[in-house]
Length: 144
Image (cartoon, rainbow, N blue to C red):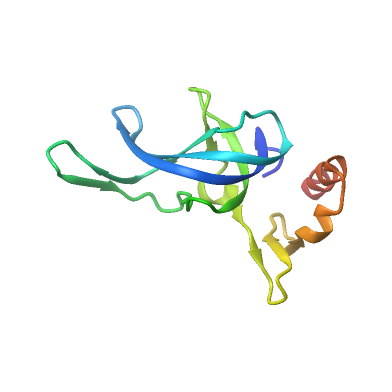
């Protein structure tokens, strides 16, 4: 996953809206604020396109499209995102819902995040005490 992503960031979902285009159909576009870039270059306020959503047409008809495995973001939540750049310069999660991890805490309030590639949990407290370069090295090492 790390190798396939163009960009890896820790970011907070700010707001989302749904659009419908002939090329892509119905999709949800979420705007994010960057907390930390772990791989690649991305501007704050970047947009992530996710297939599916619910939209109200001008004639007040409700139209929806559900895509199994598509990512869903809640405003205000933090995520670790593995992103692929889209042709229009925005982003999509790598491998749909597999390209994002939401943050959680254990029973003691320790920040945790589900990890990829066979690891069960990574304590973010451990990573947070590391320098940005050390965190990037840890992410790269996990990919090997």
